[in-house]
Image 1 (cartoon, rainbow, N blue to C red):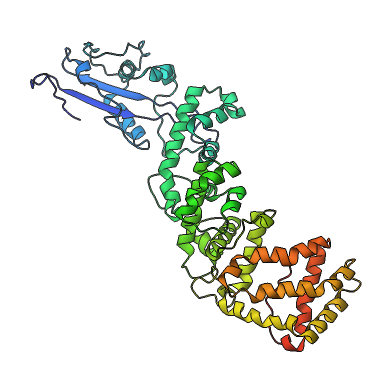
Image 2: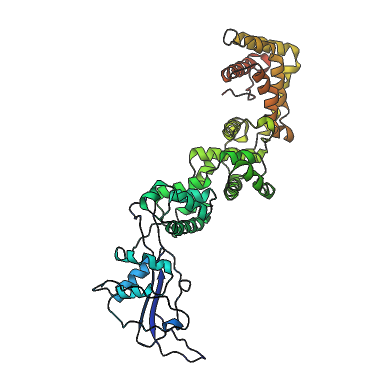
Length: 481
């Protein structure tokens, strides 16, 4: 309750008024699963005024919605309290709306009444025309009280994809749900803007997903929280393929304009995805324990998405080259699979699961040990012996036996040379390029199928264990899959 005193030339008006102003936002037509909350909700801007001065000049002390703007979750409770205080016994039909007052115009208000409905009607003579359009709906719903934050999944996805409000409205106008509800463009525009504001307020919580369940500002069911987090951290394969292996720095972020043009992903969405990659990288970079599990616990992601992020972090840390023309035929999922194999077999965590950076850095001691494999190609007797064992195992099991036997030495030299050079940082970055040039392309030229390559690598590894030099040494060069 407040006393408003206002006048010209410092002379206060002889007026005491009790005013209350609140804004209940228009919640909108929701196509989400929140059926229990309701689909058609009306937003009212209500201006209640009781005065003991019949000659009070209402135009001299207007109340604006911007003067008392309350959070949407508090406004319904305040309006309900006002209705209880003011009373609504008979609730006669609302009178026709009056014209909007202009500056300097004096309006004589109606005498005080015990009913709230006339005061609500008086409100519509003071607010914007769009509010008077929905005045006829006031009979059906005067007050709506709720505490669940309503989020439309379709609008949320449009927001994530980088659509502007106007573009999102155009998409929604073409949906079947909107056609059934017969919602106008103005209604959808208001609802979409409201949804976008809600998402923007929630975004800071999505940066730290573990805080979302404990915050009190937005009351969101657990299953809806999981959906918000999973979709926010989802990414486009085409986009991540362009930035995979690059340093997650400001310089890379400046090039996102070109990436957006090349992939067709909206620039706003590209920036969100890039920031997500960088955020996850910084959080888990120095953590102990399995990389996938750290990502899952800190960002509450599904197992599949957590493994994809582990691949992104692993490639960004080791700076593997993935952008060369020879590698363009490989998809992100191809690289993600390779990352999983390298993490499980070539990282420090493959030996000791309680060291820092266990699943991020390659095991340097292991890479150093790979140099000992050079004896397989430098010792002629050992090379011939290895070839004999492999060819004996392959005979009669593949139609490409002749090609495998003829190219054995070239293929073996290619694999061993790749392994022996991995102690150098540059050679680590070029690992996939070397693998394609020295192993995959020769096999492809002889028309090897995936089954043929798997069979060859299996016997190549097993036969090496039969050699006296490596009989008791575990070999980690090749993991057939």
